[in-house]
Amino acid sequence: MGMGAGRGRGAGGRAGAGPPKECVCLNCGYRIPHQPGIPCRQMQCPRCGAPMVRG
Ligand SMILES: [Zn+2]
Image (cartoon, rainbow, N blue to C red):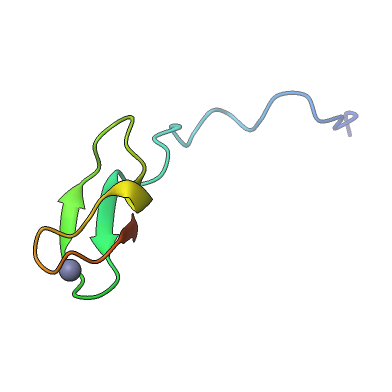
């Protein structure tokens, strides 16, 4: 019935937690907690030294 003009996003159900704050190694799968301010790509796996990506 009402005009559903994109006003109000749902009932605020999902909290904006954002993406998981972890970095994962592409090479061995090692995971480390993401450090704020440092992109995962700049991190190196402590195990094998490979570049890491967002987990
Ligand atoms: Zn690794």
